[in-house]
Image (tube, rainbow, N blue to C red; front, top):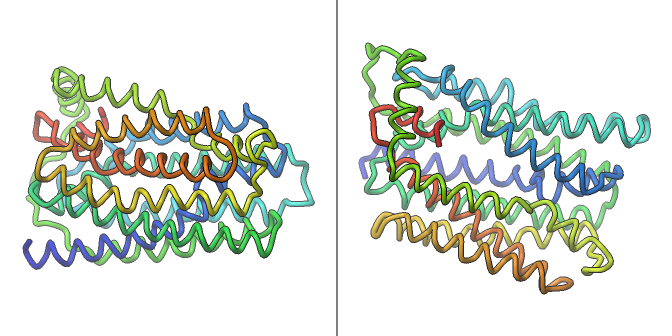
Length: 359
């Protein structure tokens, strides 16, 4: 690695560790789900949250493709976008809970909380493809998988630490107001993480390069989707995602008396099993992907996905809950490292951001 790549790798690792720490305080499959349950959310509302997460992370990427389509330096607009949209959206979780709890009906708070969730997912969705493309630019193909593995390890390890901390805080200070203060804390840590990313050195690019027009981008969409290798990859990825849209329902499942009746604090602590498993798996799959290709990691993720569903169907109580979250973590790591790198490497043309958005 060059000195610049080493510097960028270190900043990515530290920045993502901070981001992982705050993400533990707002993780949808435990923290957000449990707050909604506190205000009387049923299965339909939890399912709506899953639909919001999937839809609002994906569709706004088209906007991001047009907004960030320039071939020039991308760091500054990415940092500004996070500070003006993503960070305030995280803070909105805490504002809703701390100001309205006890002063508005549970139904009103549920709606506003889901609206805050949709705003956050939209703000992330707009920037997601451009952010992935920017990170891919920082490191060449021969080291990218390993670095992404270590970056994801830092994210997951810090998230595990944050989950342990949040679970212990909720055990000692039960009540929805505690969630509100955790959400505000998350927004402050997230701002620190983004400022660290601002210290990264952008790779030299041609400032005179003309940004592609909408017609150019649509042409590259057609090239991407016309590539059979890419279509096969997408088909498998879609099936894997379709068969595993159950994250928040794991907490609901083990919260019920029929499957263990686990309290909120215990469920949040069990959720750290996912981040611990993801931390280790990220490093392993990243290294394997650089040496032997990222398809191996994708297959591992799908096999563990099947095993996790078996744990949920056959298991009961705390042991099954821990095993289920371990499986979720391994599958998440396969999505973070293996699927993402495969997405980068299946690009059949010169505009990776358009390819990422198509994917």
